[in-house]
Image 1 (cartoon, one colour):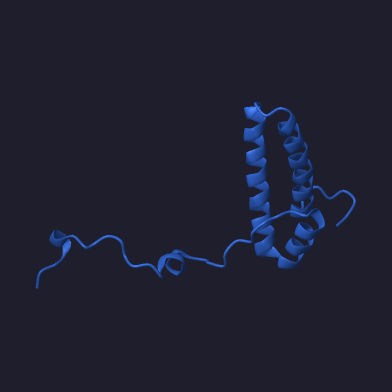
Image 2 (spheres, rainbow, N blue to C red):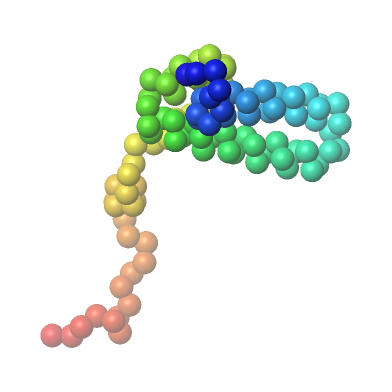
Length: 103
């Protein structure tokens, strides 16, 4: 991008990747530091959400940043609504008899 770029998803993901690597090394030396572990998990989740956003917006930039940083990331599924996601499964609940209209 440009020299003063700080807000793009690529820049944010790169910065988080550096901090994640640092915190991972810190936790290997200090395994009982649970507050840092909690922060690390939150940061990994935030990076995952940013990568999901980047995948939806521009798949080429997503592939480039994942390869450049060497990140393992599973791209999100291509399901857009609940009907597509759950339509393949049978209905779970039976219709209650007192709610069925009699003819």
